Image (cartoon, rainbow, N blue to C red):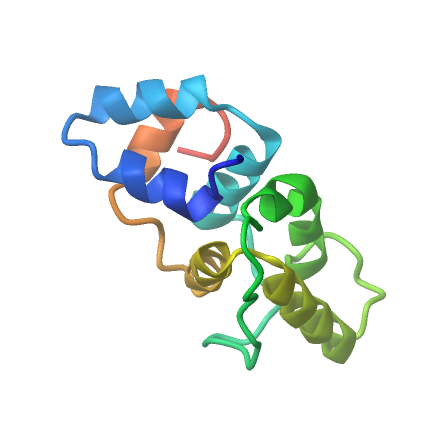
Length: 137
């Protein structure tokens, strides 16, 4: 069974020592993890979605933690610099559909990040130590 992104980050964010967090991030380095950390902490990432929780129905299927790992590339449709030809209505509908496929905790995490609220237990300094050059200093 795959551990959901939100579940993993909640666990690691609760570690007391920064070095423990860095070691855990490095040991679990995936494309999806890097995408979510960059989306949360890179000041150059500009979300093209309105602030606030969108009107979506949380997924009630079990074991959906793998979905974000598989579909992390979808983030490109919701940030500036990619796919400028998509209408805002289509972009928002795609985001809602994406949230409805995700594990509910992962969907909440993504909404939280979209509103530039960071991830509890992490700082940009910690992220840069784990993955140099992922986000600008």
